[in-house]
Image (cartoon, rainbow, N blue to C red; front, side, top):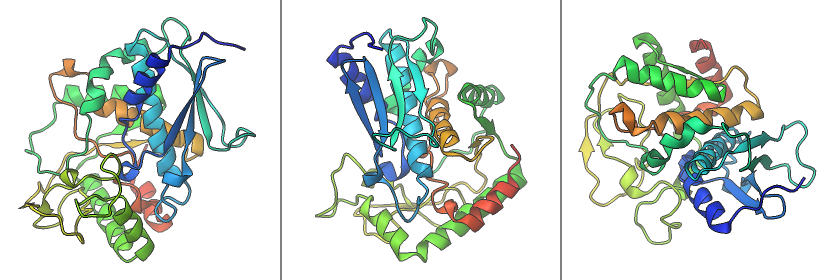
Length: 308
């Protein structure tokens, strides 16, 4: 059924907002297609920007696409439109393209996603930080707000206690060792890491040198060092906090459709409206703490340690 035609400037500016979303290694594994005849914006995954070794099941790719989908919804509401989203089930993929994940119309019900408008100003401020934090406790009301932001997207956000946090830290550390011993995984990371050296990819994609953060004096927190084996001119060193406050975001099912879910609240929770009085938290991509944890044995340990 034909929809309301969308002005090209509206579509272009909305997609520009959407692609500020986080993704594994900032690879931006998505494509948006505007169908002028139907007034629809289609979301596709881009396997050419995937990580065959670290993400063979395309879990992180879908997480990133879910984050971009959330950004598109926020952008539409900010511009006075009402997004209506149709997710394509993975078991019945589009006959034209199995990477076709979702369709978005901008003429949904008048109250569609109306609560998302305040998130717009924070979209471009969301970023990953690998620098030391102050250790200041996050207020309970802010954590409650983060939990509430996850629920409408079909996800649950948990604030783990000390034992649970320690277990997660051990898993990430073990996964880094697993990854360091894998030549193909190291090659993928190197291909998407920018250090300022000649011959690297464009600065607009991949992990930029400024985002690598300082070298750690010791491994104590959930911060992955993507520049540990690379020379980065002028990179300082620092001691990071030993007792970080983290949150865990998950879904009730581990399916391709569900994987689109955590990417949406990852962007939403991390782009909390400025009315809270706190700046947006420094959130990694939806997979930075999870990509090397995708090894089956390590993921099984992580599932056993989590109670959703």
